[in-house]
Image (cartoon, rainbow, N blue to C red; front, side):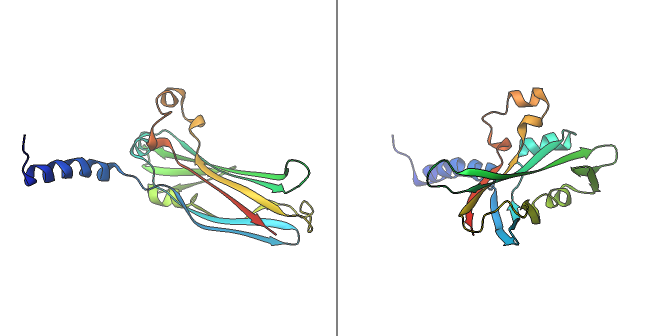
Length: 182
């Protein structure tokens, strides 16, 4: 059975196009800086991500999405497991309100309304000067490192949505990074 070049080219193009159309950009850290002053440690970061089609659809139907940034700070020890000296967490709730056609971003006890999804997600994509270790918790003689993670928290979705999303790439948004500091 002989195939013409044109048939093979069309078949190859047909296989290639759907993958490109459905491909999503993987989340990435575009900026990450750890600063230390007077034995306190602050973290600044910027995350670049896009929601998958299923997450966008759920958000547009009024299902709130929760995003979590988490940092653990450790002191390196040669004689035992590394000691965790600090743990900090930030949680954002993003919800679409169909009645007013606005997005509401809640952080802690504060909330703010935005007219479009791009502006709403921009507020949680970066943090500047997040104090993760208080003065006195860091030994100036020891080596320290931190483990950072940013993720879409699917455990806070309504239970019926959680059932079918375990292996779907549309709902997997997670970034992790470890970095030593002095």
